[in-house]
Length: 392
Image (cartoon, one colour):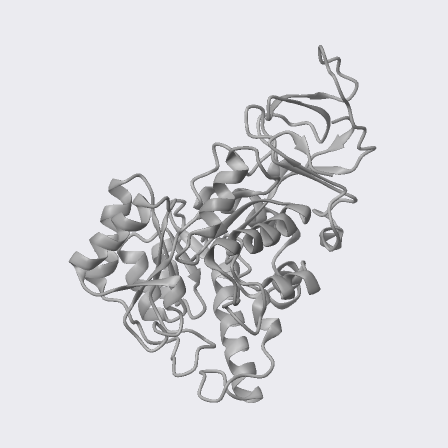
């Protein structure tokens, strides 16, 4: 890759801001001054000063969620892999070379997509899989049994964590609080017990992995941080007390999902957000809490969207716009959240997240300089490279 513009905050091992980058056997094999003579180069692409960045990471997706209006599609379970591959391929085409599926169908379709990509059978992002979410018995459990394992008590949690890992989960996803949008739910209520969180963390850690947890309410968030959950998903109403526990830490952090708030319109009677006035109150409260985490604390913030494919296709850049326009995040920090921050939270920072010699050649080429003008990210990349292969 010739004449690449590099972003210092997303580059390691060199101070060059304009370079030639050698890719070999799926890895970044060299970074040198422009015009360098790498030996035995079979193919070259001149970027003419376009920006070469690490591939993007979405740390909170559900590849089974195809339409905003419905979680379930009336297809045979074996066919869901094709639907999820369609979603995954859309993500790859928009620059996401890694996605973390935070709760899958019981048929384990995301694991099928992951394994097909690893085998080289399909072009797709790296897929990190949770398997079905572990959800305590509650109001929202039985509407989503297809996507959840119901848990009750420490012993049962131990069984379900081991079961998910046995069937190929890469990490464990817990459900810790009510939801914003599910009828009859209150997101402020903690629905999981501390001994259940503790057991899940203990077993996952012993097996070399970690837990993530759906948590909107402050009580569930705080308990999860105290008990060692690595990533707090949504973190909608996180408090200063909990943020102080996270300050300066790199072994845990939060994955806000604020773009989805822009899609809140009409809601079912009986949901927590059941009117336009209530909707704006909730949106403003979430913005205030996440803005406080970013502007007033030193917290590791990752990138997540948690939106359906049809919404993603309508506006693939909705999360970027929300963090820039609604939360006043800096361009550099948005780019770091989409790359190195999420790589750290997903325990992948030795492989991806920066442009560095020896790392996997998961890369995107951006027309323009997104560090100066984030609007450069509001369109598809010029090129997407996955494991050294130029997808387009």
